[in-house]
Length: 213
Image (cartoon, rainbow, N blue to C red; front, side, top):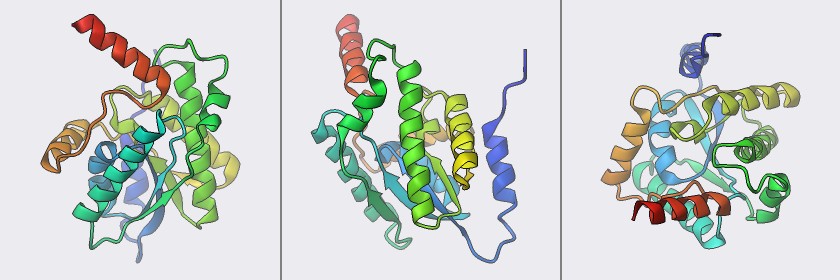
């Protein structure tokens, strides 16, 4: 069996190369919500000038999309007022998600539909990073123990190579990252959703809750 790649170690190596630089590298950080961003920002802010990109056309319904965005804005304003972190908001267009999910509607959570959803969001993040002259792009998605970290990093590196920008590897749940995100969510009383975001994950969540009852 091939050894698993430690993406946190890869990230640490990338960061080590930056420590002697006179100025911080510019990073576009894709965010899906405030709770997932908490611990990630703690790890990355010492080394990067961070701009957050909120692009999640998978999120259903639109009210949920806006609630997660508002919570992210409040958290950044409350916790990082002096850092002046900018949030770039994408327009909500759920058709972008349903287009890539076509034919994959019956896939289980964590299956091929999620792979295409990762790809969609990472490709858009890379494009926006290039448009804004960023040095790196990455995503908070790997903070979740429910996300496929191998897919996320392989997609990120492949997209980076094709588009000519650097992807910051990561497995942010490592070193108690996920635990830290839950602690910060409680400390700042953040809204933590009980499903990933899309209508299909919502249906699975409701079914699990019913079965548990």
